[in-house]
Amino acid sequence: MTIRKMTDRNFMAYYIHKVLTIAFIAIVCFIALYSFVYVPDYESYQISDWMINYEGGFVRRGLMGQLLLYANSVHNFDVRYAILIIELIFYILFFYLLSKIFIKYKWSLLGAMFPIVCSTTSIAVYRRDFMMLCLCYFSYNYFFKYLRNNGGKTLLISLTIMSIGIIIYEPVFFVLVPVLIMQYWSKKRNILSVLSLFSIPLLCMILSCIFRGTVEQVDEIWQSWVPYISQYVDIENENIGLAIQFLGMTNKEVFAMHYDITFADNPLLATITLIIVFILAFFLCTHIPTIDKNNKILTANDDKYDLSKVILFQLIVQLPMFTLLSCDYGRTIPISLYTAFFLFHFSKVYGIKLDVTNIISKTSDRIMNMFSSHTIFSNIWVYLVTVLVFPFHTFVPSLLYDNVIIHSLEKIGKYIF
Image (spheres, rainbow, N blue to C red):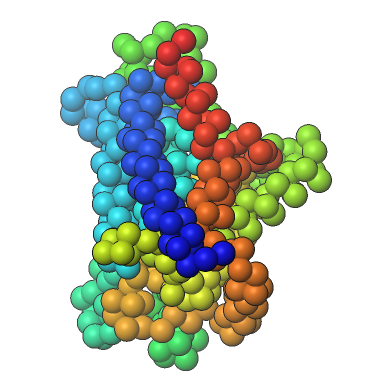
């Protein structure tokens, strides 16, 4: 291939990339709008997960529900719309923070949007996820600032945000605490110091595991909402919210439910498609193109080896969420990817070398060397096509037709017809 042809193809890729970026931004906006057009009901997981409160005693995930219940007692409103507005605020804040990072490193915004856009669902499906991602961003920021300057105030702020985040939604523990423990361990090398410093976040997680809910609490929580939602629905025909019912399930029932949703129909197909999703997501995040606006070309990402290490670490520490504790892979995988971007960014800003263990670093380097040994993975056209055909869905299996093109056409068809 001549240099002229290569240049022409790169120019074309640059402009195709611009068109795709605009289309993805439109889908990001559509995802927010969709939730307000098709508002979930009180029985849905999307709404009832926010309604969990402390009216039956302390229980995991009850803080936001208690605050919403209190606000409703002051002035009655349809809590569904309040929940959607909260989600929208954090959705906007999240993409603002993330886009600042991508613009700083001149990365393609496709890499920032594809984990959400390719699923093409609604912000309601993500429940508290964008709130948690924003809390992770600020907790990381203050913690890395502490590592750089040894400021007690910044450390206290980080630990406070961390603890509140765990009380609100305990799975955030996996992407928040282990990686920061590793960075503190790298600094102090003292296990007692580590345990002492992280005692409150660890205690919050322990309490969330112990007080995971009972059958009695399920009814008390639902009844506490009945006076406030009865004017918006026929309460006699309204079932208890699914997320509230979930509190009454035993660990065995929870594990069995997650396994059945993910693997019961076809374990082999589910496993294969899940592996494919992980590999493609890893590729799309590590090989994000760098934009050269002056020459109007897309170039290779010089940070891919550093990115790969922290992405691999965040995926590994979330293994409990990828096995028996969750089945919403369309939610859990993006959290690993996005928090990895945050961590990479703050390590650069504060000049802190990320410690993700030697074994993960070496494994990451081997994986990236495998990618680098094949020139096809550095081809920008391969990246663009992979984004378009990336099979992603809230649950597995994610099949070939589960891509942004088909998902978008389905949603457009639903609006029109």
